[in-house]
Length: 270
Length: 265
Image (cartoon, rainbow over all chains, first blue to last red; front, top):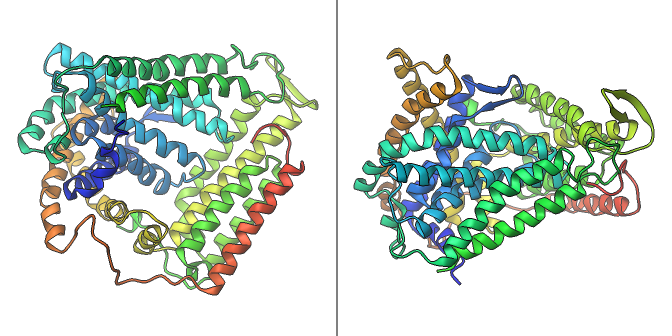
């Protein structure tokens, strides 16, 4: 089985290292630029970050470089320069890695159309990918923060899901429509640098479809089922609870993380 | 430029340590503060880190982070009593929700834990140069091309932020409104900043692969370094001490010390 070898072999290509620097730098820089113009969800508590549109956008252009770029960009822009480096940053690194990994992996396995977002079908496919990636990151990061006693799952998953979905869902298709044709002409796409990979599949295999469905179930359905457990269905928030209050939530979330892992393994298979 | 570089020149004990010893310290702070959930214990960890910050003379550099740290602590104090229920000593009942002494103590312990972790990370960054950290990471096993990429991001962020702010000012002068309107129109308008920034960045970095390869950069080649790091006896002693304390904290936890809720982290 090809275990997504491109994630590691990309470091052999100078152009991919440059793409990594661009992905990470742009993500980190935009977190700074838009910090002065917050679009509040809950005033004083959390704001939508337009920079969140960068991972699904660079993912479709730079592939594995964007996965590393999202992880490192968030680590530098949010955790290090923003003064938030904690044990939660490990979950942030992993979650943001998948933020950059899931969009290009799904696209180059199951969608034969290019992600130019200039037709309704291309736009809908891209929005589907954004929905899945929002769910995946809203499952992974809060699961970690709940596991290590950092921030409760329910609160964080809710915020992350909508933050990712709104930012990326609106901005990223505009970016793709404007930039993708130019990037393709300029030879900036990851498959232009890493030969031997297909940007879009010549044939869609059934196990890749199943893999995509499992990632969707884990990310979108799984996140919301776990959130519901967190507000009382299973985890007795509204009752006077036992001491080990996080266990039902961690168990349910853990099942969906396993489903996600199986889905990604199927997508990784050639 | 200085806004994006946290390093503060100094001669303190912590400044003089090998970056690998400092990384070990940060990892151990994460362990110490994570194994306990009693505020007395996590508070002691926080006090130790604060003492280290003050002794290193970097407290003034961290002024811009105090608001964030206080917010983090307040968020913990508000959220955890709601989500981590349990305990028998009832403090107050509000709108049908019971707050116990144990859940409030747990929230306080987590608040101390978070602030201690953030401060230890900032202590590492304010007392270590980026190039020293890059070398330390390669010596700890990170591939050179990855360490190079990470340090390049640090170096190029000021240029990217500068470009971003220039584009933002130019677009606002043209009437692009990023402050008013509903969420959707503001998000849509932000593309007017992101697209030019991306194109500018790609133009700037289009020549980078050629430039660095012409200076001898080969991602897979074995490297030699102008800088050198030496892990001295005192670095070893410091690392051994913090590792011992981390192991001891795990031992204490396993024997029931430092916990409000024994079954959770």
